[in-house]
Amino acid sequence: MKTIRLRIIAFVFSCLLTAPILSFAQATSDTATSPNNMAMAASSNPSLPSLEDLGLPTAPVQSSTQGDTTSQDQNSGNNPNQKIPPANNAPSLSDLGFTSSQTQGSAQEQALLNKRTHMLKVHQTLGLITVIPMAAALITGPQAKAKGKNGQTITEPTSANLDFHIALGGLTTGLYWTTAYYAIFAPKIPDVKPKGAIRLHRDLEWVHGPGMILTPILGIMAYKQENAGEKVHGIASAHGTVAYVTAAAYGASIVAVSWPIHWKFWEGR
Image 1 (tube, rainbow, N blue to C red):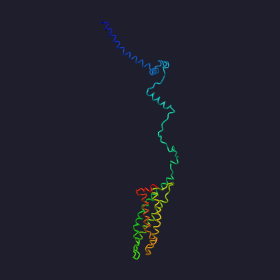
Image 2: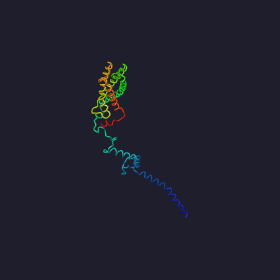
Image 3: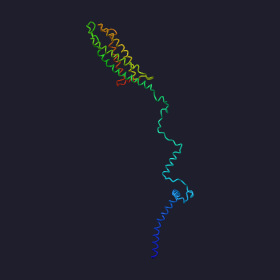
Image 4: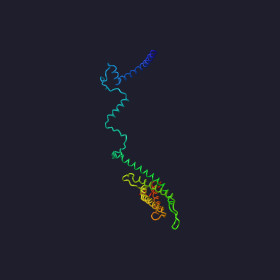
């Protein structure tokens, strides 16, 4: 019995020693039989048979990550029907039918527009300045007029009052026509018709324009009658009335384009 026990113990001990050796031999055998390892082994040892001799494919040794990337690059580069989406899908002006001459603009037209803008700005500025001597001439008008009724002693205006009133009237007339010059001779835009407040502004020109012609003429006639010691009579007596109507129309034309009030009746026309 003792001999049997010793044999059993020796058998178990030998199994424990041979198990790691067998497992290492199996791993070495698997590694050696793989195609890649066999290729490297064949290249390092000329005496070993090649893969072609063993009937195995001779594919290049590559990692799985590099192989996938290379195959994707080859597939994307070898596909001629693949379309690259455009960076911007918005249509250009040429796609809409506009020619290059239409989109580039004209330097001549731009210069014409700049000149018109400049002249109208000067017209507006001078128009506002003209209001000052015009208002002063209206205020000094009664002081330059002879006072008294028929059958009574007529008080003639002083020379200073007459001269000051005439100077204001002359300054107003000069500024008015200078202002009108910048509006009349400003370049016109073809096929553009005024409407709204601009139309009202231009329509009032037919009132204060003739008024600025008649007012100085009647004023000169009245001045001559005053110097002759006569009371202003005849058509010269309408000098003051024409001056007030002219000033009212002129002020309304300024209000039409400057005052923050919308003229609904004229805006609709």
